[in-house]
Length: 271
Length: 309
Image (cartoon, rainbow over all chains, first blue to last red; front, top):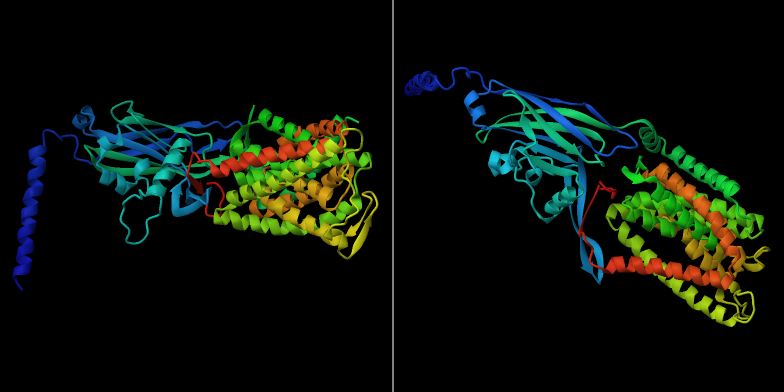
């Protein structure tokens, strides 16, 4: 019974010695770096309005890195990844198979929270920044992006069956998913900027910008900020009308057609 | 000039859509078909989500049919009584059709069913019409109206009860097949996004034996209402009517329809039927090829309701 507290005391003493030793040994290298690195991000805009001539957009995300180790910074061993994830939606991916000579939708798989768009910028290729397992754990990059919301007791292994792979491929082909490297640049030792290219068919809704800081392949911390993509002006008016007063909208559409038909007859009659 | 469509949620070229509307409107005025069976595939080809294309096609059809029907009404080639009877059946059919549309979309088989329906109906109708009209043309090569010969022999359709007289069409026939045709075309219209004119016209010509001149006007009159019911139902249940897209198509459509109606007056009935048959068959062949040929992309992504995500 008495051995318990004694062992604990001994351990504490040991730890104390170690804690005292470590800063002493590394003191010359980390003189100005007693505090851990922190970073913050800021978006160039909080709201992207889709107007009638919307044709894609460029989003610049600025960030500041504080308490960075000058030496590691010089060796370019800090890496930053910035990604903008579109609204998560449940989707069904279907596969066509040849049946009785016809191509028919057969197999399918549901994903309950697939980002509808994804744009990523990073300092270097993702594989050089961190090991695969880390990327998967954090859901970074198109190949490691999680398409399902994490359920209880589920491991963080990204889904890579044929349906998930096809989903990623189609999203990449349509430009809704894109990732580039070398697009996060340090403009000063503490300030960096990330350039993201957003497609013309950017989905409306709440987008989340997530930024990750790595030091020599080790994940340090994550920051996130949100961005709203909204329809503006006339587009927004029509969309609201169609969704909120759908019956009135339908009747309006019919009356518009009748009027156009009548007006066309008056103006362009050929008899 | 590009324009962002609020419901289809993509950017399109305004002039391409107006041109599409004009071409289809011309055929619509010429043949008395709404043109939906042409505009829907064209829109899908232009990357408009199929559900929006189908529903918005119905909206566009109202404008060109109304414009065409006005031209026919002035010439006295609209049988309002026959049109109203077809309509009653058509309205019920539209309601059933929209329910079916929603169900099929959820099951992920909408595209397949729509394509199969197109191929089966376009193929049958087009084939029969082509054979008949070519025969009529050969017969009438000397002189003649090119009208369908009224055979002394009456089909089973003419033996059904509840007979009714349709003066304009010079017809005395049971209302059962008239209501039935209306109902059936209402269902097809809602599922396929068409007014059903391409089936209505041959059905009236061959099953009911209505004179070709009256068929076109009456079909257009009836399509206005069927398409209107479909439009309102699609808007209320599926939110798939893009009024901006529809309006662009209408502008082209109404202009085209007037020119089409004028061109139609210069053609004989049998020539008109043969041309329509060729048009119907070519759309059928294209769709059939699509079903059988290896698709470029085997996978498709949709929301659980079947809408494109």
